[in-house]
Every structure is written in structure tokens, then in C-alpha cells.
Length: 242
Image (cartoon, rainbow, N blue to C red; front, side, top):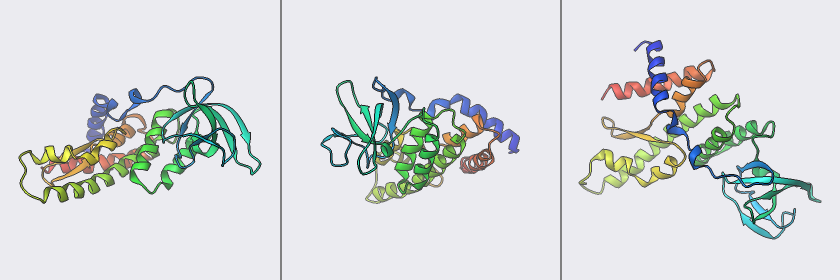
């Protein structure tokens, strides 16, 4: 297939399913009272009663949790804390490095650095999802989309191996496609907007390609666009060879 026809095909396909990779509807409503921020490092996301590392724990927050920043203070040992609202009734101090804010210049680049340094594929994808949801105008989006797609394809290969181990125990009544696409290991990725398709010829899972199509659809002039088209062409060849 000619490159321009392939490009047109995926642009049209992306328009039809543009909402596939979005989980905006599932985002929490941020608490009122200050500048919105998102937890990106749950290792540091302890909300404390005082701005001290050994302050009384109020609660610990998970990655992706929204807070409202109301104030700022530096502890005696040089650690900067933000005073935040977690809910209308819960507030406290949290270490600055645990959060990013869409209104803070340079925080999009911070998220990108964290994503790239993440050893876990799921952590990389969940952080990339935070970036895509909360930094819609960042010039760094094409790179994150490409990384998300490539990571999702790596995950697909690992999930395929896990499913095959489960199927080796004996015969099954359901179809292979049903057994693969209902594998519980897919669930947490699905909640991040990552979806997989079943390759009946190779008997395995592949990423459905939303992030790559989004690059072609929205960031066609970016350096990542040609890489995305290459990934989509490989996906097209897999489908065409069935």
C-alpha cells in the first residue's frame, strides 16, 4: 500500500475512534480551593499534618490523584512542601516532588523525564496517560504518544506469553479470541485507555495502535509521525497476512 494511502486510511480510522484512548470521562473532579495538581510519584505522596518528613500521616495518595495547592513552605532540612486540599474535608502537607501541575511551566517536561525513567511498563503507561490528560497543549505530546504505543506493544508480547501458559493446561470451550481478550491481566491497561487486539494467525495479542494513529491524526508534521506510520504499516501487514 502506498504511504499516502496508508496515511489517509489511518487518519480516517483515527477520526472514527479518536475517543478510544481517552479516559477523560473517568477523571476525578479536582477539589476546590487552589491550583490543581496531580500525584505522579506515589512513593512521596504522603499527606502530613505538618510540613515535615516525619510529620503525622493524614493519608497516602495514589498516582493520578488530584489535589488543590493552597500554600507552600520549606522545612528546616530544605524539603519543600505544598499545603493541599485532598477533599473538602481533608487537607495537609505533601512533598513538592510528588506533584505536577498543568499550570506550572516545565512540569510537562518533568512528567516526560519520569515516564522515561520508569522501569515498569504499567507505571510508564499510567504516567503517560496523566501527561496526555492534563497537558493537552504540550509540544512533547508526540514523543509521549510514541512511547506509550511502543510500551503497549511490549506489554502485548508479555501478556501473550502469560495467556499461553494458562491455556496449556487443557482444552477450553470458549474461543481462543475470547480467552485472550478476557484475560484479567488486560484489565488495568484497559482502564488506562490501552486496548489490545487478537491476532488469530500468530495466536497472540497486539496493541490496537491508538497512540500511533493519534500522532498521525494530530501531529502529522512531527518527527514522530514517520515512526508512527512505520508502526501502523507493521500492524497493517500483520492484519493483511491473516
